Image 1 (cartoon, helix red, strand yellow):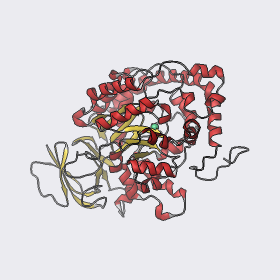
Image 2 (cartoon, helix red, strand yellow; image 1 turned 60 degrees about the vertical axis):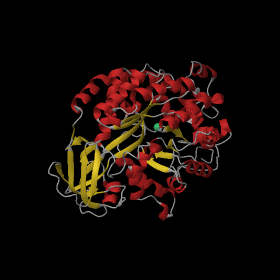
Image 3 (cartoon, helix red, strand yellow; image 1 turned 90 degrees about the horizontal axis):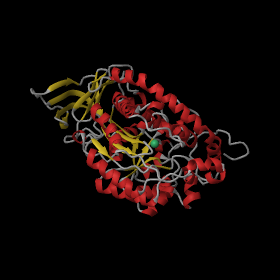
Image 4 (cartoon, helix red, strand yellow; image 1 turned 45 degrees about the vertical axis):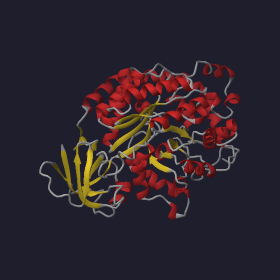
Amino acid sequence: MKTLIRQATIIAMGGPEGDAPFTGDILIEGNAIAAIGRDLGAHPDATVIDGRNRLAMPGLVNGHLHSSEQFFKGRYEKMPLEVWLLYAYPLLMGPQIPERLLYLRSMLVAIESLRGGVTTICDCFFDPPIFSIERLGTVFQAYGDAGIRANVTNSVINIPVLDTLPHAREIMPAELQKLLDGGAMITGKAYADYCEAAFRAFDGGGGGRLRYMVSPSAPQRCTIDLLEACSALAISHDVPFHTHVLETKTQAVTGHEIFGKTLIRYMHDLGVLTRNVTIAHSVWVSDEDMALMGAADCSVVHNAISNQKLGAGVAPLRRLIDAGVNIGLGTDGASSNDTLRIFDVMRVAALIHAASGPDYARWLGASDILKAATIGGAHTAMLDRQTGSLEAGKRADLILLDTDNSIYTPMNDPRKHVVFGENGSSLRLVMVDGEIVFRDGRLTTVDEAEIYREVREAVPAWLAEHRAVEDRNRVFEPHMAEIHRRATTTDIGLDRYAGDMPAWPGTNR
Ligand SMILES: [Zn+2]
């Protein structure tokens, strides 16, 4: 089957034009881009899509999200990470979510992503305490059914939470500590066996659209044998070692208090800071950390909105880029962001770094952001040979935006309209792997109304159970707040907060 997009405004993000917009044609054959150029001539055997008043660009990449938060949008606010985690990822857990809700939750992620022009997602979901191949299969099933490209992983933690936070053992009362300790934790070997089974069962599914990746939650939350096992798996399967590092100041203090070094230096010294490593956040990294990350050729997924929702600070993005670190964009979960719209993340990321200082030559611009949202993001997913740019031979993952509206009229630089003006409302067509999955307001792969109906019917009862779980965890909140307060008053020689919010009472910060 052939499709020819005729005379669209194209931002290819690769090939001879780079990100420079031009008017041209795109020929799609099967699941791949067969040709792209200013005039490909007539192809009588192709279905023609009129590209006039359309902007064609690569599908967006959401380099970091957690489907486990999808039912929590619009639920929390005004909490830093360490406090919010108590409710979104409760320490005293409830039962695992029923299988059908697991499917619906993942399907909502796919629907929202495709409706926002995202063709590739990296889903790092949590499903403790049991690692189940069947339940992982349910998540893959949803992404397979929706027709999205997805890297999926079931994230792992095997260190008791109180040993991952600075001063937690001093601050948390003994009777509460007892509630959190105990219970066998998964070993590196057992997680590796689980991952090998997951690679066999799912990696390469959906005609190559679906990949399994490994995800140690964070270096301070995993034993050394587990980090080493994850690193070996990522390298041998050529997939990301997808992790969280230095999102908050509390985590920066964790490195100094627990390991006597930064968490990046800790990963480096263990030999697990490799080119397979994709780091979500990277807000509180030091100059030396950035140099190590650049030398290792690793990637960062920048979650500009989530970092502000959780008050984590502003990541030093220009300096990471200067250090040679590849950058992608992520929404993070739908609870620390409330949407999965990468267009929103693009706009915020394009604006917030100007708050870092007056040297405007170093502010981020539309080209930096477009790169991070497409080919840079594909690189963070280790999928840059398949997707992220419109080039002959690559998989046909693309979007068409309508430019016959107020966002693009009059047209100046299309790149700047997309980054500073687009909110997703211009989206007319989404193609993943050569298949049109969204067109003129409707997903072609999923009965959305039926999914929403089932969610509205089934999820409130589950959320009521979750409210009971939240209530049981509230007892920890004052102590988590104190851990946060104590860590954020510690001087670690760098500051990632913007603005001049008054210090905590009686301290400098
Ligand atoms: Zn995250």
